[in-house]
Image 1 (spheres, helix red, strand yellow):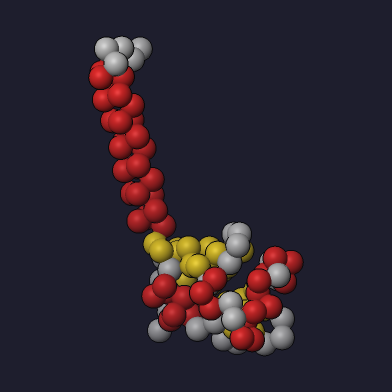
Image 2: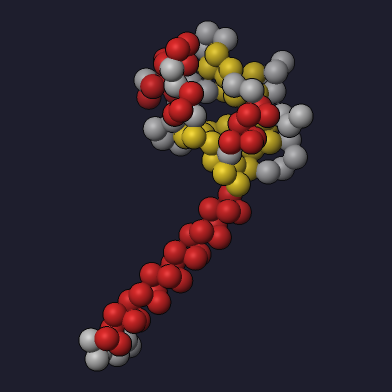
Length: 108
């Protein structure tokens, strides 16, 4: 079982979560914002996120909390995002170079 050590609300239902094993993940909780968790759709309420000291998990006022194991499983590791970002940057650069070559122009 992993526990949550810190949380930061990002935007539109996304959280940046640090777990007790040192991993950091982006977690999209939008799919869970129904029923009792519908309150989380309010941006001001969403920003009130905190770590429950007894449960070591993400919580909001009114005893709304999320299972830390589910957060961990559903989260996207920051290393994956970094690698994707690098890949897209390299891909975009390659596309621009190819585009320029097809138009007989050289990049400075």
